[in-house]
Image 1 (cartoon, rainbow over the protein chains, first blue to last red):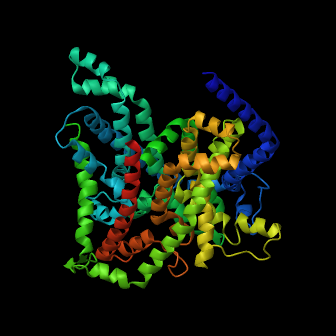
Image 2: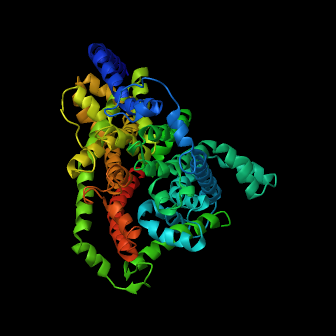
Image 3: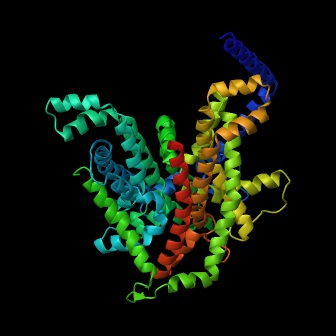
Length: 297
Length: 281
């Protein structure tokens, strides 16, 4: 016993020594932290600053570091670029919301069944459901495109949302099955004794107790769909159905004043980044836990 | 079963069926205008003899081989720095992770601007520092230089992903172990190499695999930053599948290339799943 205490004590002392020693290098590491923060934030900040340069300054070569005057001209040009920013925002947001909806409607009941019911061949079904984890969706785009073209789903938000749901479903099932399995059965048993149906159990008891899992799934579906590029590039060929990343990629080769309209590009980049960063800062906890589950599958 | 049916049906229609069709297509010659014609392994043999297939495949391997160690070592060093509990360290962790949540397409556009020869801030800063005297043509002129610029941008974008997982692994090391090594008088780097690294090895392997798979599937950054230039030398494997399937409409050949890609990825995924499986036991 005393040996253990003695060991503890020595550990404390050693830890204090280390802390004291790191006090000297502490400033150096602090400076390193600040340098790293700067490197990470600088590109985003420069893009934001470039987006508020007046038209002529935004097209200057060599470029200026800081805007000499503040102007929203670039945002104005983006607002009315081609079909107009509202169309592209609506396409991106609509696809993301549909993808969240589809994912939850499919994954919540399925995860419930996997977590709670005895189904013959359950393991096999689970493996089939997770198939998309081992087949990269990039490889399935051509057959998907042909299928969508046959039924008129290309150039539609529903079609792109279906594609995004197919990508996101395995991860979502996995996260939701885990969080549903973690809910104690006593709650449901009490409800079942009171004569609740299994649907009522799911909606009234299990869904409210798995809010963190559901938020994680919705968050990842949103980020994935809002940012996804290749699938949208393949499925959306009409300008009016472009999502935000597509129209910006198209705008990089578009010319105005004899070159790329850099100011407008910066405005578009800033607008695409804002929702992602906001959602991350608000829901950081869910983000990190989701990543851990995703990587450890 | 009623609960499972919709998800199962969805996966059968939108994953299993396309997978089956891709296998079928890969054995056919098909260009949309002519009806599909059975060619057996013809498409696979053609890939073997296709110079551009090898250019794309080797370029993708080179990209993966350079970026993976940078991401793992960089992510791990950042995790060592930011896994300690101080407000500045936690803030740094949050900041390093910010680019992870933005889209790869959007970050590629951002760096397309930063690396632009005449309008980008990278050349402006390098010239002001006196490191270069003329603007460098970073993108789309020389394959290796483009690769380096793109790798720099992707490291910025995803290094936080590995870092966050490493932080999780480092923080889950029991404090008794850390205390014991302190009692034994181990220096910081001794603790890192003898205690922390061995105890987080599984996460290192996992992140390595996730990074390798992600890099082998690279597309957005090359499509946006170089458009495959010069002469498709920077067109990655996925890029070449895309070119064959869509602009060129060689559907059968594109499917065969997809199959080769999917099987390559599968090999890595199986290793990843085995690693995770072992950890549960």
